[in-house]
Length: 247
Image 1: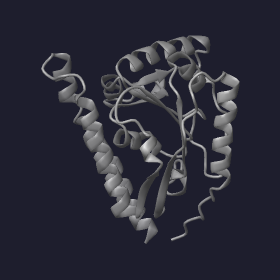
Image 2: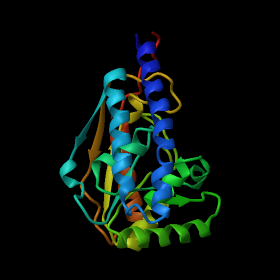
Image 3: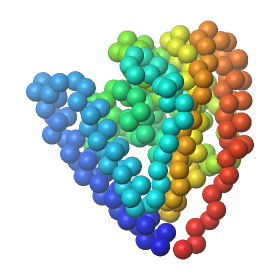
Image 4: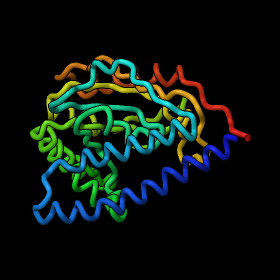
């Protein structure tokens, strides 16, 4: 049964996402011709995210719950720093804040249709091989996002990490915090328990998104890194790796 349910969700996700990606072509062209207003894309990806997560609930039996959601901004610039376990994390913030502006790897810009949409949304690409140049570009994009009142979302681990495991934190989040003067809103999730990295099977259950008290602005980079590592370590230590799916 779990195999069948996973098949149905994967079909729903990949086929639906392909159609949604192709559907971005006309509005992107209209936007470049000046026919469409800026900002249309956030409503579009909001609908795509709701579509995917409806399928996750109905076909795979996985739902999501936010704890501490009162700490999330309703508007204005913010910095959200989260651990990263699954593809779920790369979409949920389009539902949770008004203008989620993900920091993402530059390679995604090469994907047909998807890359154009990322540019249209004004998300922040990072070339992970560029060293100091990448940090300078990141800070420039941070200035733009803050000026536009966006909510920056960054995964400092830099990759998806299985439940119960940890990875070193890259310094980009600290550079953004120091540059912007924004408090860090730490977030932990156990999304990998239901939607594993490159996993065909999707497991039923509840994905928890825990929003922790903000770290105050003005901390040194060493202090903010140490505090965030403690928050992540405590939450991850409490997570239980999912059992294998055999049926």
